[in-house]
Image (cartoon, rainbow, N blue to C red; front, top):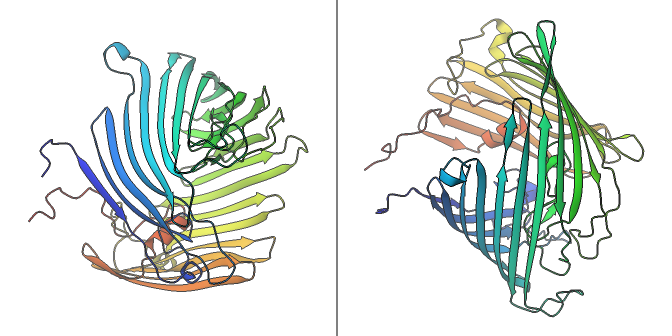
Length: 471
């Protein structure tokens, strides 16, 4: 019973195994991001329009190999969180986006208690977007404070040595601004969209404090505009940054976007003194790598996209990705991608989902999302990742699906590279009774994660009734 009438959601994700080498024999069979860390989570969530509250226990089972290949165990977390905020459409706060996030977390490591303790976090965000017909400007302010209560005194050298409690407060001011300029190109239209983001965070010495969840943010066309170089809450980087970007788009006479191209680069106006690791050398480079990305859509069935990262010192490509996708209709997709990370990897990636009945002229009828193309019908699915550097297939998922109408059968062969000269092969079988149950190993998660635009042959599109399982 729930007398308050508030929606309450309970989530459980439990994974346990008895063999420390399970991750080698059965890769990609868990829901964890890392194959050697099995998540064991329980959480309870409730809330309304303006607020949300949650309580959770988040633990890991770490798979330690029988040999010397061991990894560090993460911290278990016991967490209470509360968030209140609004998108700025109410009363005296009209037009202002604001939020207050609070979180109390107990961190415990099963094999060591050196940095076990509590972290109390509060983050306040306030922003307001001013729009004009040709542009916008959004000033924002963030206050971030955290307090640590440790089970033992901190041992690292520096400001916090010998203390069992510490408090750090930082503030970040940012301005995001942009223009949208339009020009007619015959029947088409082109836009030119310059964007400037300024961010400033003062330096606060955080060396020697625990780092439970912070890390460097991946450098891409999304993160380059972010005022925060680090993820998580245990390290907040000092920064004086200006990011300059320019985007152009082409639209046809009907308003469909044919092409877009973006270039962006970040400039550092002062050295960054705070790093992720204690004692890290300050970052003194003034100009980041140049990012260039774009998309070309010549028709509804073809799409080409790519991103290039150009080293600011050598003017050579450091990372690049290019992909072409052919998607003429439901359950028909072919994608070919090329990925380069200089001196690290060079991969060619081919993926597909295609009805085999097309080969003998039986194209079927699109019955709608999650209903297939009619039965009986065979489908081929797969993804092959080929390493140019090693001259061999790195990973592979390939197989067949058979839609009989009232049941669906799947057989999938999976090959995963687990070491330089070691790979694991699995053959997965599944029988699905539509609307009832599935029997056998489940390859659906593997297929959907590895094949872009993969579609389930049978999927519940509409949410089930709240009385579906009512007794």
